[in-house]
Image: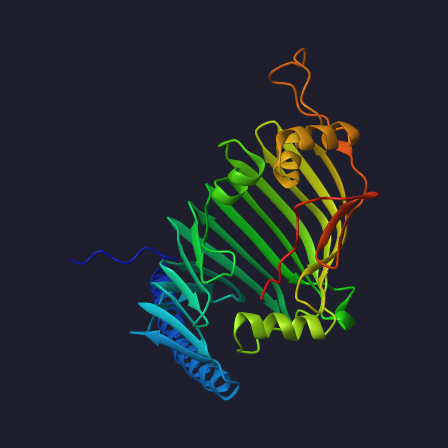
Length: 350
């Protein structure tokens, strides 16, 4: 005889047992569809941007482009990236740009070398172990670009003064539009290089120690690249009244140290012009090179408080900076206070 079902027992539905899994499945399907829609729109936006750039005279080429990153990122990968405008061309290695789906205006980019930029006369070649960049934008436009590179190396050829080379342990660069000087089309640049090795600087100052460089400057009339040669671009900037406001330019090389503030521009002969306020320590070797002899440099150094270090100074003591008379760049000459520095003639940059 069958047993009777106990009074008050209610058979429970299994709906709530499976509902979370069903809901998760539906959300996954919906998110997948949304990601592929975003992916397709990204591809269309890139094609539209490249077409708009081409109309403006900038020809971008992204070789073997792929778009990946599912489920939460959009990754645009170019096996090589090239840019050409007028007589200027630039090329990079593999370039990967990544943005989170929920934060599309912040883009992180990793770029492989080598770099080559040339206008047919001047050529810049660069390499690095790792280079990463970030771009932050808003509805109002670009907000900031930051670049960091490990073990950067650069060679510049085709300059009137000959080849220029340099390397460092780490490079950091930050660029943004100046929010208070928009009418001047001003841009702020902060840069630093640690343990830089620059043969030209070694020959000028003396010593083989690496140099730490820091710069905080504002460039006016920085309204973008027009596609001309480097000389043409610099001439357009000069004619527009562009200038370089140096908020701080500092270099430390062993016991030698210098800090500079001031303003620079280009004169009609394309030479640097302006005035700098300088504080320095241990630059007697530089003054000797500039004056054509160690004796003359030591004499001028003593007059300016930059003579040889005392033998009683502590070997690891931080050098004390002494303020120098204003350094003026005028008519191709270099003057410090009432003295025109002999054997120095500023050459046109282009």
